[in-house]
Structure formats: C-alpha cells, structure tokens
Image (cartoon, rainbow, N blue to C red):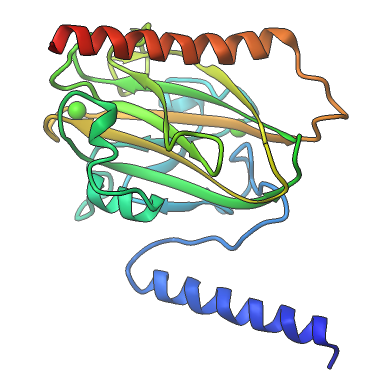
Length: 259
Ligand SMILES: [Ca+2]
Ligand SMILES: [Ca+2]
C-alpha cells in the first residue's frame, strides 16, 4: 500500500470516527468537501452537505411565503421549536460548536441570548476565491427592540470576527407573507478568502432576552467563485461594505441608548 493511500485511509478513519461520535449526540454531520456541496439547497435529500444543529433547520420552497432567490429551494433556520418533541439548541451549545468562549454571542446584543438554530459546512478553498451568499432575516418581534433584539449571523473561519451580524430588529424590515411578521428581504454578502485551506461557514439565528417570540433566517445561493476568473462587481463590494458600516453605526447607537 502506498503511503499516500495509507494516509488517506487514516484520515478517512479519523473523520469517520468524528462523524460517528457526533452522530451519537444527535447531530447531523456532513464530511469536509473540496467545494461547497448543495450551495443553493436544491439537492436531495434536503440539506445534503450541511451539518444542522437544533430542531428547526429546514428546506423551504416558495409555498413558505417567501420565494427562493435561486432555484426552487432555500434553507430556513428558526428559533422556534420545530418538530414535535424537539427543540432549538441553547446559545451555550452554539458557542461550543463554533469554538467560541462563553458569553461571546451575548456580546453581539444588549441582552442575554437564549436559543436558536445553526447550520455549518466545512470546505476547502484557495486564497482569493470569493464566497457569497444571500440572507433574509425574519422576525415576529417588535421592531427596534433592544431587550428582545433577536439576530441572525454568519461565521467564517479567519474572516468574520468571530461572527458578523446579518439582520436584527433594527434592520430595515418590511411585512412578510411567510410565517413571520417581518423580513429584511434577501441581501447579498460577498467575502474574499484570505488564505488557502479549510474554512467552516456557519449560519445561525438566536433568540435574545427570552425564548417566546421567534425569528428566522433564510439562506440561499451560496457560491464559491475563483477570484481571478470572475471580477467582483463594484456594486457588490459597495453593498458588503455598506452593510458592515450600517452594522457598526447601529451598534454604536445601541450602546448610546443603553448608556
Ligand atoms: Ca436555492
Ligand atoms: Ca425572540
């Protein structure tokens, strides 16, 4: 047996043991991919390639009341209870899965986080490649509510710090035709990957202040594109930087209100 074959075998065994161990605690785990698998959530079975945590990560079509931005399906994460007998995961569990210290997720709101759902995928990529995705934050909470400011976020290895907010009750919200009262509509995030290696992309949504009024996060059209082959439209860069600036401005406002 060649060494490289043996090494791949050992890596496969180690990965298999990890998947087996996580499966015993009720977690759906997908193996590391050389590219993003099922990036638009069109593949069957639903959510193939994604690891899901919490009871309420589902694949939705247009009958949900919000149309996918690509293809026929989109992913929905919710802070709700999901299937009978199941429940979201605690924010502490979410921090453990993401490798964050306790209290990290609370620091992104002005009240304690309680529970939510999470979805991840680990993939390999080259420096300069561009990762993009569309998100839509939905909520039943009142708008501009500091005490119950549920939020959606993404985390990406070596890029986010350590998570980046995508939507909360201070986002520009419009009435939603789906199962939530309000939504942001779909927005684009585009990120240039700094190094060659493995990345873990995570999407999450959290209840803040209590666990009684739900919020959700739709994700669709995740893409990984070679940076040199497809120049990034200036409008996308401006949108991404504009969203980042908006988030910083809003956090400053929140801090001012609390003070
Ligand atoms: Ca889709
Ligand atoms: Ca809530």
